[in-house]
Amino acid sequence: MTPKTTIALVCAAALAACGSSPPTRYFSLDAVAPEAPVAASAMAPVQLGAVRVPALLDRPEIVAQDARYELAVRENDHWGAPLAPMMRRTLAQDLLTRLPAGAFVLPDAPAPAGARGIVVTVLDVRADADGRLTFEGSWTLTAGETGAAVMTQEVSLSEPMPSAASPEIAGALSRVLGRLADRIAATLADRR
Image 1: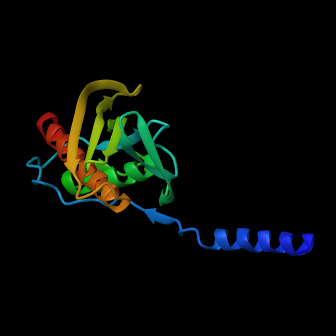
Image 2 (image 1 turned 30 degrees about the horizontal axis):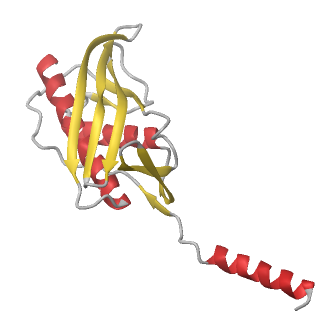
């Protein structure tokens, strides 16, 4: 075999290997129905300001935890958008269906005077090989011109998954955000 033939065969093999890689799949989060309607009929307006996600998780790829201290970054399974804004959008959709009409101001929309704010801080979202997604973090209610914290509640939620496959992770995280919205709405209804 001549050197030119060898180089041509190596290049052809490399191109064939590239052509057989699995396609990238994209996943989103979806709003879920509330567990129970909120009883409050009138409530001071509130706006979801931010959802803060650790840099470890706020990446294009879906991340799972295969073993203790070991993360699996799924190169071919990506979020459809950056994770923090996608979580914010989904949580906003969830809150919109749980709070009384006119009580929720969409993110980035002009807020009326006196509107309160919500900031969600995600400490960890862990999808493990045993089929469980765990969410740990807090949410803070802010008020006033300076956006001072009025109250903060820590949150630890867990959701079973049939498997640790990426579609199951997206579904479980969607359900966890729905449960977080249920808690926020119930607390806001008590505080009005």
